[in-house]
Length: 427
Image (cartoon, rainbow, N blue to C red; front, side):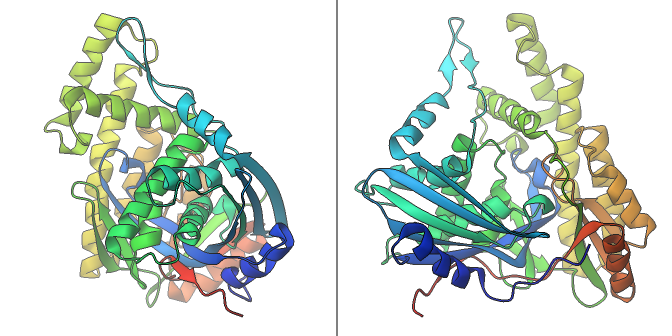
């Protein structure tokens, strides 16, 4: 299996060109956003932790034009290791409104909150959901009556590099009114809107750090996203000079079916935060002990149906706390140039991900990467991808990549990217 090919032309150019064939009219706007790669912390995102997230040179681009029939029509063109693949899908704004209503929590006869089932989440539902949410969050006019959307994605879907998150952001930027000032507050708001849309309309659980990094990262740096105060700071990225980074994944394998479990854990975190009136569990003093006391009380009063076992929840809370500490350690190591510390930090994260969080799908590949000379290796997106992110000494990098490619794995070099941007539509 060859290395993942670098694009020969920008995704935005190809999206612009493909849009006329899809929509029968030129694109009104084009935007693009980078794929993302997580070093640590992404599973503590919902807890309110710290996430270390980089952006890739591989991008998704969206070209859009208006419709007047209340329909969102989406063409998704993805590059794969076997060539180009095209998917067409559509949904109406009325259908999106109905799906939104179905996702609202209800109160049962005993006064308990009933969380709705996870959304079914087609491609059009996710992309249309971004547009619908922008309308209802007053980022788009309520006169918006549909759109044709053409997406070209160079980010490998199976790589755990946020391909769909990049598409969300590209669509949101392309749909903005022409006179929008794309400043930091608007970028932060767009990240929030994209995450809300994915939570409501997608079958995959949202990871807000991907939207945040794609919109707010600085070129050449890893974003350190701290949800205690919603700050985004930067740290040097360990993928040039002494180290190189690769994402490795087996081709044509089923994605892990853990989305429902991850969403369930997020729902538990939300319920506990609500019970204590806390913005996030991380901001709740002595959260692990107090949340377990609360869960025991819930079991006694309402029974355990629909609730995690106490031991299981205790493991999750341990993981969230420890992973937040590890993400802080990663940030400190990156800023001090102590990149040799990444190995032990990420090994601890990988172990805890399996032991306390139950996501073991990338464990064997991570161990193989370490055995073949990686300084550090960890699941790229445990639970939704079989991929591994590996950091390798530059002197060994070419042989390391060639060996995995020879074994039939897809090897994606991780190269610095640039933040999401609105692109020119002039030829």
